[in-house]
Length: 352
Image 1: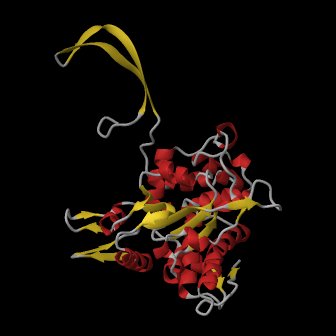
Image 2: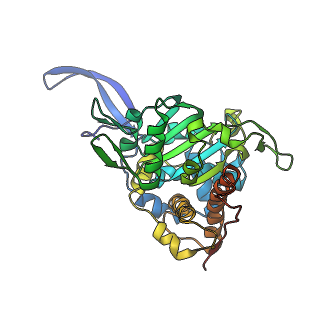
Image 3: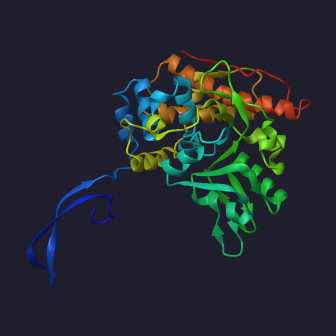
């Protein structure tokens, strides 16, 4: 604490003047209560996970991101926690479309220090990749996640250059600009607001009523770009956050500063190899489909089962959700390019 500093609550007490290092002091610190976690080791989470059932752990995580788990259905809680996957898994790219006020931007702005949010406006190659004039690395080099908020309002001064480099990066995790060649594990999140209508079959849920392609800016309405996105999260299923007394967290969660650092540390290892031991993919899977589903499941395992203790039903639950996210991308591609992308139903088998 004395070396690095720490946030906390101190109690001050007026005392009779005393001399300290040649100065007269009349106030003393009598108590210090830290509210910053000095630890960053995710092993603490792994150890703690064994004390919770899956439902209890999910509730604790939803509290951690600032929301009340009692307001959301079991499926909606997993949708909320899906937003954390880019924070714990490197080079995973997600799209989320939904109505306004569902907490999309709030989560990324408050849950981690390693996020850069770009809210509309002009995005240059210097901002994202590398500034040739100042020789300063761009956001992809220094952040864990780059979020394109209000993606429909994002503009590129040189769309061909930006999109070409962006697609190359999404495929390989590498980029070049000028004499600079770099590798990064930054994840990308593209978020947009869509017009919705109430779902008559589910209370407090909505359905999109506009073509998702046109939520993207024109340079991104490209099947080659969309195919590189790993999953589409149906944010339209989440209710709007209307009142703090209803939707905001009231229970215990994980200290946010520790949670941020723990997620940052989790990125260093991928569990895609472990996923391969438990999942069999149907013949309709292409290489990108398989990679996408493995990455999303790997992220889910880090968040929900950090101790890697789960049964077949629990694994199947998250694997089916990951499959659903990728299936939405495949369906979207079929609408854009029906001749190139057939309408196929992906399927998986979870081994016992």
